[in-house]
Amino acid sequence: MLIAKMNSGKDDDGARSEEGAGEVTPPWAAPVAEGPLRARVPLPGSKSLTGRELVLSALAEGPGTLSAPLHSRDSALMIDALRALGTHIEELPGGGEFGGDLRIEPAAELLGSTSIACGLAGTVMRFVPPIAALALGPVAFDGDPYARKRPMRPLLDALRALGADISDEGRGSLPFTVHGTGGLRGGRVELDASLSSQFVSALLLAAPRFAEGVHVVHTGDRVPSTPHIEMTLAALRARGVAAESPAPGEWTVAPGPIAARDERIEPDLSNAAPFLAAAIAVGGEVSVPGWPAETTQVGDQLRELLTAFGGTAELDEAGTLTVSGSGQISGARLDIPEAGELAPTLVGLAALAAQQGHESEITGIGHIRHHETDRIAALIAEINGLGGSAEELPDGIRIRPAELHGGVWKSYADHRMATTGALIGLCVPGVEVEDVASTSKTLPQFTSLWHRMLGIAPASGETADESTLPSNGSLALGGFLSGIFEGLGGS
Ligand SMILES: O=C(O)C1=C[C@@H](OP(=O)(O)O)[C@@H](O)[C@H](O)C1
Ligand SMILES: C=C(OP(=O)(O)O)C(=O)O
Image 1: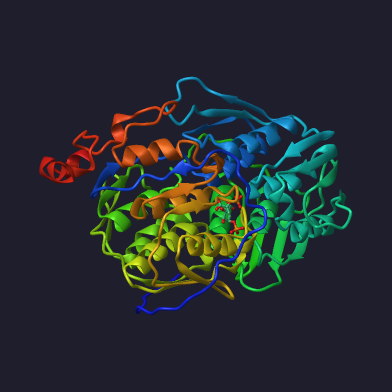
Image 2: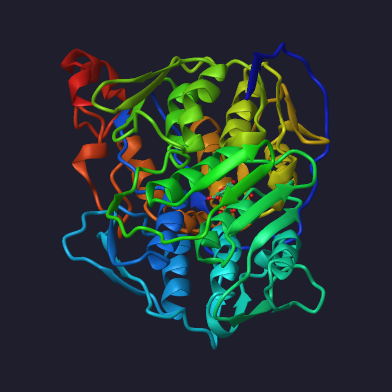
């Protein structure tokens, strides 16, 4: 990660329309913050940890439990996929607002002759095919319309090189069928992971069950999102698997049993991004409890990345991260190949800094063109659609000073586009986020948590939770000062 402050500047750039933007639900009127924030926002479990632990639990030697897992569209798709392959997964009673714990019993034998719906989940479309190769019988994969555009070829070719039989009619993308034979040889394989780290994680996660394990050698440009590969290695090691990176761009996993374990899932730190960014954008403070002291989640980098735009971030001994800001937003220059998942929020913050006359550049994120949508094109089109001045760089976005106005912000079925629209809407009246329901991909409670962060009564159908109200319990934003006088202990 490279961080530097930017100088101000000014330029123009035209908006670019994005194919695939569609109306799904009536636009959501993003609330404007009318004063400094003071809120505590508990968040549900990490998508990436939940996905990995579901996969490893399904491949483990015996049953195990995941506590505080994520319940969202992506995790439900992963659960359904593993169930289709014969895994028994049960939600235990007694879960709170974010859902119950999960009990997972691996299948005695993985079953094929089934189909898997991937939705738009990269983790499902990448992590499940290697498991399907271990099942007996054909397993057909497909997903949402845009999922068919997400790259799969490097992974499918690597699986073929490791002994799998896959038919995709030469597409290199969804839909495809893995003809499972009950096992996979494994061994050394070359793969270009420059479009997604998930290709590597997918092979590593299933590799203890390959006859020869795996030795993955990356052949292309730089690998993005490397903390996610570290997360995969750490999850494997925690279950007694020998998993290493013997050299840059190489990873090995030895064949052997995957220990059954009970795991507690950390909150999703990447989903904390728009909430914590709100404190920088608006001023005041936002806290997220349950922040791990040590973690493999890339969201931990928010402590540095957000404060590159101003403000402070403090992690206390109880594990509460508090980001505070004044509403004065600096420009920033961030090179973040490892943290592409955080880029939409950071670009949103940069668009708000641009309103205050500051230029920003966020680079190292070319691979986010292959996320839920082409995020570079989508961010530029939507920021410029609100009067901003964002331009495409070979591997990123430059945002020059410009005043924003209200308008419709399209989400492109992308949860992080929707939350970025909400962030901008805090400071720009009249922003309407189209398809805010896309946030159900990883955070179904997004709008209710957002309203509660602002101290706004939930809309009908949303549940209130005192714990995320401003600590003075007020429904008005002007409660900030009285909250200060009550002390920070309540946050
Ligand atoms: O392994 C994972 O859980 C993820 C890896 C990253 O994918 P890319 O390497 O495609 O960026 C990240 O952006 C995604 O949100 C989750
Ligand atoms: C890139 C993301 O998701 P996926 O797991 O679908 O790749 C994301 O959540 O930002």
